[in-house]
Image 1: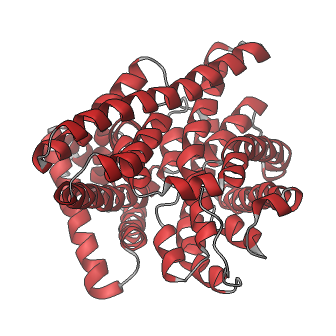
Image 2: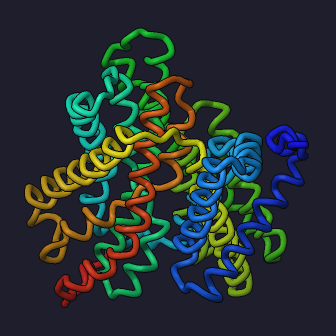
Length: 430
């Protein structure tokens, strides 16, 4: 008798589901480290992707127990909720914790232009291209759907590329710009996506003043809230000298602060970035002992590594939720080209028009273009779209772009960076 594995999966508790995914992540990380040797995040995603493809082929041959069980687990886990309401706060804080704020000040112009204006321009370019090109392969999408796709696919993700850039000896300036841009454009992209999703749900086109007000409140309010949280956390860390409680305070600040920001409709991602920068710079220098710094760095490094590995395993497993066809395959290839072209235009315009002010190495546009990886946030956002044929199309496009950027761009960005001239003189620190 055939067992309904999807029903069986849905009967698992949250603890059991968490144990399954954590155990799978640990096993895949071990296999990658022991036998494959790719960067951890890329390696575990490759293996989980292969497992998903095997499950799909077994399903096509009539052995659908494995793919049913995998779909049931993913449905119970809710990728969007796990990432946006669980992992994202800790990943952004951990990423910002080790970014030198003086470096960000040195390159605030390219970071600001790419993270703010670049994200908006990229979203609009992608939306226009998808709107006019996708009908050629049989997919008609309303312009609001195209705008949503542009908003969710434009934010970049530094997770897989930063270690590769460092090991390839990439100029420090480019590492700073890529990291800084990706830390801030996630928040900008999410705010734009939420506004557009509201338009899709209501059918009403808001006024320009409403959009500007919403952006100012959510993005500006998130940044201000991050400063307040960072100040409170700084005071608490400075007032005691006990690494156990101080590590616990940072964890509570991240989880509690993100929950508060979401409750009051402020940008949680931007709040976590600002708080991480404050704790990682002023807090590290003035509010922590050497012992506390050591344990806080170690704790958040482990959190970052574990959550990144888990996230990329989930990305690899999510392939089973995509509907496949020849037209979808062609559309996915076009989507990859469109995303790369939009990134090229945004980076090219920025580096050309602000060449003297940016003071970046010759050929920096190559690394900035190829290093603009897309990641789990894009998948989490596309899964928030209402069910329907449009969602299925955009899910396939998003997944193709994310997989291409991580596997192809992530594994080759080091070679692109190696060809750049080395920086001779560092920029003056402010």
